Length: 311
Length: 266
Ligand SMILES: Nc1ncnc2c1ncn2[C@@H]1O[C@H](COP(=O)(O)OP(=O)(O)OP(=O)(O)O)[C@@H](O)[C@H]1O
Ligand SMILES: [Mg+2]
Image 1: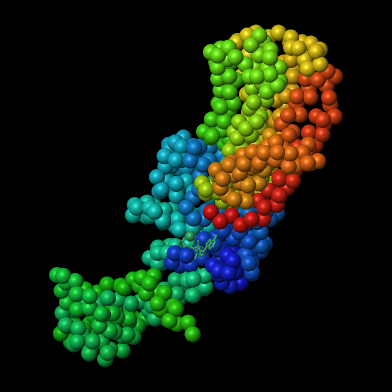
Image 2: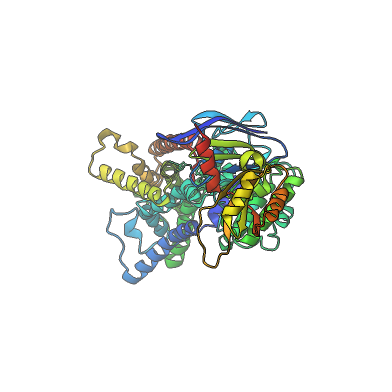
């Protein structure tokens, strides 16, 4: 549905995005993961035809996107880039009506329905300048849904939201996908992408660092999950772990001694059988297990790993 | 989209402020007249000598006075905001992510600004007539050649003058739109257009333009005075119209070319 082929964007001599390649398929919730300034918004602008690629192209439904003033009207795609921009001096309702007029779709725009979907029904007559960040973010999603798109493009849809707001928006994204919408969302939060997406492209400094399913890209060594293991005494535990056939990797974590922390921490990666057999071995060997939690790699960890892998 | 562009203008404070200023000019003028009982010196403005006796002169004098700077100023700041204001509010990217094409959006804005030019001139003329009538009533005017201009034709003169003034006004608005598109700076575009007016007036005043002087945009603002002649001098009026249209077309074409090609980055 959405193909990015050798997309490059330069601002003067500065290369913001460098020969990016990936493809979003129907039904995906596709994550576009990268830190600040990595080129996410630049890519999304091109999808909307707001900027022109320096090289390469982005294709939507088999047609080239990214031609400013281009002839085709972005049918089937909707969303937003960066912080949503609305007319603050107009009501939310007027904003939606105006955007519906700019859509020139046949039939009456389903304004009450999209307001209901994002939970803004009842506030639509308020001027947008009185809206909170979270409300604007939700209005942006509502305005995108108004186009009844097949692909929804969301640029950091949870940025600036409180935990409750994040949860609502993520639940909404999940629901929309179940209703058949393909979703492309950018984020700098690894946990968010893991939670929502089935596929992901990781971008850093404008370059593609990794692309594939979440398990392929994020899941530690070859998709085998990592854990944080806390034991009463690390040395003995390591000896047992090194002898275990179920362990793929174990090392004592650099001790950042926290006050009141008990035990010693080990980073552990296990085989496909999961952590069960390892725990049995440890207990059998007389090690006291204080905690065993799945280690969520941070975006930082992932980046280190991905950039180190590159030749 | 035209309807929405006009609606947006109507809902913005700067637009209404401009129209309010245009309404205020004749009102303040009449108030000052009532207090001082002294008109401007002869030759400064059309029919100035009859100002104290005839209310019909009020809209004519205020029109001549306002076209000097005030009317261009009010229009420049609205036109200068047309694109730049949307860039800084982040709404341009929102609208351009929908189906509407850039060319259509551009010309919708142009039409809305054009209507604003007409509205500003019309407010000036309408309020001028009302204020003049209330201050002194209407009487026939003594025209420049000694011929008498009846009240009916005098009123027609005011509206015709306002109409003719709005044409170079639109050309100036086109320049402000061009600045708005290229600089993305709302205030800068308004100031830039006003500076153009002042520079052209200065050039004309110092005689720097030589044979090109009749073609300076600012000199088109005076063409309506030819309506007062008997018989009406149509030739300079027609020339003023095509000169203004030419200025406007050049600026609009340039603005359109930039607007449809430029990356929308904010
Ligand atoms: N108009 C511009 N001129 C020059 N450089 C630009 C311009 N717009 C963006 N850049 C640069 O391009 C790079 C990518 O910017 P982009 O906005 O795409 O990042 P992003 O991944 O969306 O970041 P964030 O998470 O902060 O939103 C940045 O280094 C930015 O400084
Ligand atoms: Mg961004």
